[in-house]
Amino acid sequence: MRGLVFGLLLTNILFAVWQYIPRFENVAPESEPHAVKNGLGDIVMLAEAPSESLRYFADTFESPVSASTSLPEAIQGSRPEVCIEVGPFETIQEMEAAISALPAEIAFQSESRAAAVEVEFRVYLPPLPSREIAATTLDNLRAAFALNNLAIETFLIPSGELANGIALGLFTEHSNALNVRQQLRNLGYLVTLREESKVSSEHWFVSEPIDSKEYFMQLWKNSGSLAPSVVVGEKLCQTIAQETQFP
Image 1 (tube, rainbow, N blue to C red):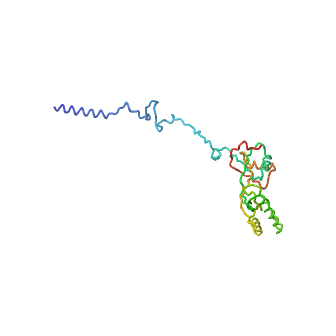
Image 2 (cartoon, rainbow, N blue to C red):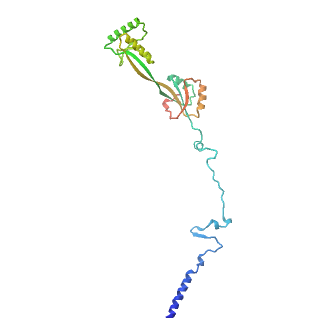
Image 3 (cartoon, helix red, strand yellow):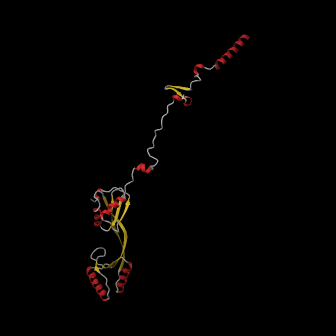
């Protein structure tokens, strides 16, 4: 019985010693760098690799934009083109004459723009029941004007909303209209004073995209079309319709 106990104890000691014996066949030599096996070969840590086995490569990266070139210039490559607007011209004929004096290779687009609203004051006798009554009233008015040394132009309104009325003038100054109305009242006539608004138009032309305003100004100067009332300025470029181009 005692021999069996010692036998088991010895067996346990031998098993424990066997567990702690290192596996020399699985340990790499100390003189070699640590490596990891994989399917492509050994992977060696850079710090442990021999210096003669390392290869160095020069940094050949170059920035596409130099330090002296700004980002907008690098993207755009050049200064954007501009469009030139010229005006105002009072008539289409004046505008077309200015365009014809410029080089034919530049296309232009004409534009009509609303100018400042003008207010006028109309003085008149309201429409009378018939043409005959209106004509008789007009004769009486002219006789009264002559008798009182009044220089007021009058005429019969032949058509429109005021047909058979009598026009007594269209004035840009309100004070002049009030004066005529008061003179008619002194003669016993009740007249009407009406304010009317009129929108006048201006004529401009706009160039196709060109290099610069300075370039156009040189062409404009050479054309001899300079006028004090005409302004030359830059405008946002838009597509110029072919049917509105001038040769």
